[in-house]
Length: 348
Image (cartoon, rainbow, N blue to C red; front, side):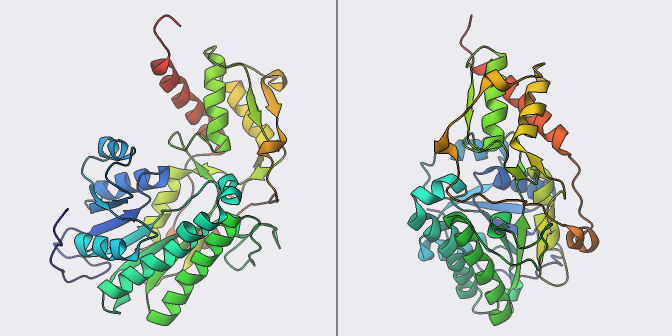
């Protein structure tokens, strides 16, 4: 067990000669890995929270970002979060940890609420306790989600759009979002929420539809599978590149005042568009014979017209996406082609 580090004087932005320190929950996910790379590249000492040192993704983190120090902790266990805060002594905390697969949230609603919702409260409480109520000296980022908008009240969605979540995941994220606002207003916490619309990458989990498509297309191209089974092909999303979105997270915590920001491309694409681009990358224009639909993959309550207006982020943060949807899909298909070739048995 790592020893508790002595508490250091913290200034949230002007770090003087001291190396800035950041604690990331959910560091094993795509956003955590990209953010850890970004912060280490900026000279931060980065600490990552992992649930058990036997976590199978620990080796992935160590190989992608070898300079990160991993701390054992769990968003369902407040004492472990307090301990992590005492060890890391961070200037910035990025709470990315969650049960983030929307489809799973219906099957594990209670667990989703405990981790994705109550986990935010516990992380904020850990900061409050360790800072002795001087929360403003540690800057906090909460990973909110476009799924909070759910049954949308207006198109596009802004920071002022009302929430109407349509899944246990969306409900849990909404709780975490409002808890972040509450600590900002109650304890003068420097607490920001990034209302991130869908963001993808080659590091996305294979259970998510974009990666399911890119990996399936790669395997079809290599003769390793025949079809891809999906749900609603007409669902539309505002998709961006995860590497762009973690830059916005960091920028939020460098501002003079905390706030909430929609991070999105402002463009919407359907699953059919995703399939068009992915299959086109391997030279197939008519993909109808390669795609099957199964009601099991339909959402119990679908969300419609999720498209974000990131005007505030562009004006205040100077943020804008650098990778468009076509480039993103091509990047993901190419990465899966390479990884599946390496995985293919010799002679296959």
